[in-house]
Image (cartoon, rainbow, N blue to C red; front, side):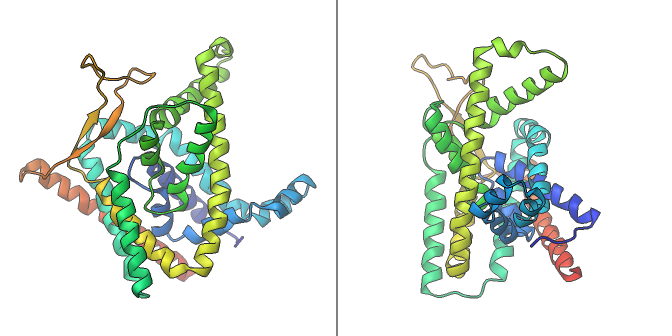
Length: 338
């Protein structure tokens, strides 16, 4: 799948990486949906599949150019560059927007999920009892996950490694939100907030010549947790990609109908009209994380009232749908040119 890419192709691929990175951090939103709608999902999965024994043999033998070409390195490097940049830029903007404009941001995400369902469904024509069954199972699983209660935070390194494996499900399986799974596992704040901020602070300090973090046991522990989480994520990416590439090759219709079901089920997670419920201690005070922020227990959904705020939210839902349709249009245009 290695091909010559123009500057605009490279730029848009980085932007898609930004989109995937931002989506992966938001609970209820799947980066895999971005890949699916933008038209590079299968290339993403099959490129990850190339990270295998042959690839490592090329790498260890010093054949770096052959290794890079074999794994479709230009595609993966640009995409992951966008994701990494997203974690230190776009995702921080999203944190701010979710704090101050929560209803409207969730409305955009809700619209994007609805648009994604339309996009995937409109070209799928292989409906039979098997695909209908997998659709229903996908919906049930997606809805069930959205109503589970989160566990307590756990920084055991083996558990953190497991969280890394599970968290990448949102990148490889559209409709499965890795960040929401981390909330259910109790480690969302630890792994996607505290650890990322610790890395950001550490890099900033190193650039200014400050190495005092070496004597900070909490910082070192958090960085170690981030390293193990990253290792688990890489392991999960490679493992899931091999599994999914096999499933897509042999059971494509069932897989696609399941994905549609997962995405439909995830609508319950991104329902815009909800109140955040926080964990409460026995004395009635909020349970706080290591940064002093309130820990999320779950979400309480409610029916919206007809007022100006609701009308604005509906407008943002339409905006979300429009974004997805625009991505679809661009993807079709690009494929026609190629």
